[in-house]
Image (cartoon, rainbow, N blue to C red; front, side, top):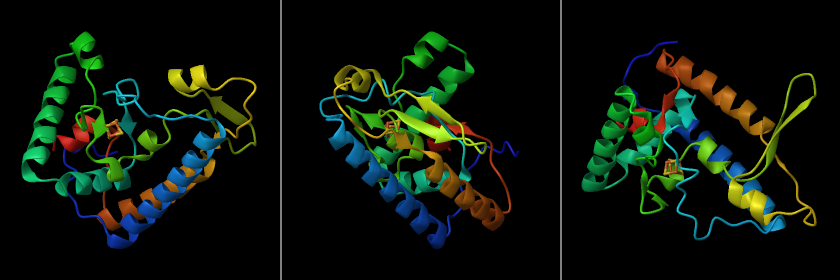
Amino acid sequence: MDSGNTVGFRQGIGISSRLQELYEQIDDIYRKVAIQSAFSCEGCDGAKCCTVDLIVHTFAEMLYMRRGLDALNQSTRLEINQRSKQIVELKRLDSLGEYRNTVCAANLNGKCLIYNYRPMICRLAGIAHFIEKPDGTRVFGPGCDRFEHIVNDNISFEKIDRTPFYRKLAELEIETINSQGKRTSSRTIAEILAT
Ligand code: SF4
């Protein structure tokens, strides 16, 4: 994989609109399961979800996040960009204590400033889920602490099946790589927004 530092490429409209559709499907399922399980992020500042360790693996999502950054007013954009650079520097200096305790550069006072452009990993955070492997076995993952605390055995809800979302994103990623003529390495959100 190319480890170039820039994600400064234009994303084709077709790919971005299909990525947006995928995000809408994810959001719909998320809302449905949240209602079933009586789970809500209301009042949570996102500090535990919006960590600096979140990794984005696809070029398609990186380009979309950059669009979200570009859509902000200049001063907000610069602020996020500066905070991202500081976070990248903290990581580079290996001051792990400070680095790990830092919240995502796009989270300001508990709000995601690129909310409509946030990647899949952010959209799926919080609710228990599973992924179906090619051999049919399922790998389950828990929800966040709040979810696990709120939801008890008396509540019946569906765990979110992430498999079709991952498949669709993989298809969009192949198209993105073909249209851009290059790949990128996986990056943290700060690494994406710092460039
Ligand atoms: S992009 Fe938004 S939702 Fe995702 S971690 Fe950052 S602030 Fe949180």
